[in-house]
Image (cartoon, rainbow, N blue to C red; front, side):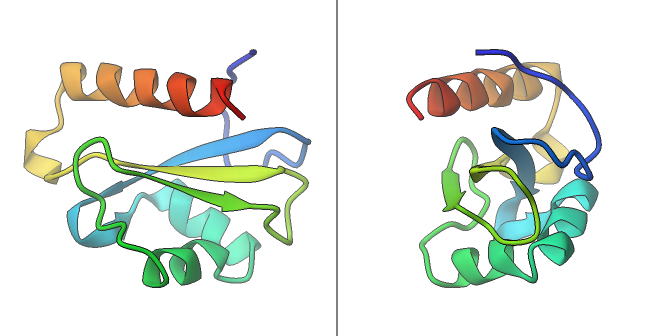
Length: 101
């Protein structure tokens, strides 16, 4: 597996990972990606139990508007609680979830 950090306009095959905080508040890049996919992320959130809780995940498969095969949304919990360890855990979750795809 090869990870690359980039803007969500990356239009290549593979997977994209974005983040949300509690109450499913999307990060700026997740909001941009949601617009690119015609609202696929917000629709998937509305149809699921995803709330942006710490270490919670949601996969959006085969989204239109991008070439990526899937989008992984990772919950970070409360925005005030995000620190370097929380970011490290989130990175580990991305690796774990995408390595099984």
